Length: 234
Image (tube, rainbow, N blue to C red; front, side):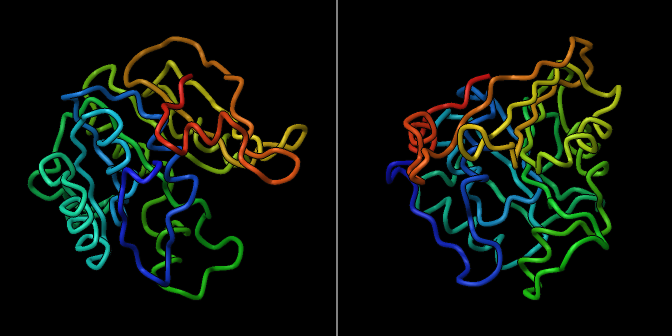
């Protein structure tokens, strides 16, 4: 965000990466609107979104140390009145203060299905990367449940799990827009941002997407602008 956000995060475990910033850039929130974020971590996406748009974000996070960091980060950035992160998890009753309806919902859910691949040895990192009791379908259902009619759901996920994301949305949401993130020109997308609206029936749109890197590894001008605070429009 070009220095607009100061962030503390654990030295070990889940680390904020480009996916977090791209998610925050993709949410079409406006000043005064409200956003629900399950799996808020140390508050990075919430802080970036709140700073960019002037919205209010309420997140839940099951790891107590990350909740404490998120609260501290909101205070350090002068966003304590607009970013709230509470102890809570998908599949459990929501804490007081985290019930909707919200204008928007966003998430960077665990990318790896339970029982597949190699589980990270660090417990905190594994909790962020590997689905547990709540699978992708439950994440999507929980987000939709907190939305107002026609509210937007935005998430970032692995491109090879796009079919699972669309299946989870099912008939519960429409107006789906899929935004591929291309590592370099000519390379397959590894991540996609997916946006949908609760209770609408408009057709799916495949957006042009964003190329992240030049051939020499530098960020493209378009990607650099988004990482510095521009919206990801699609």
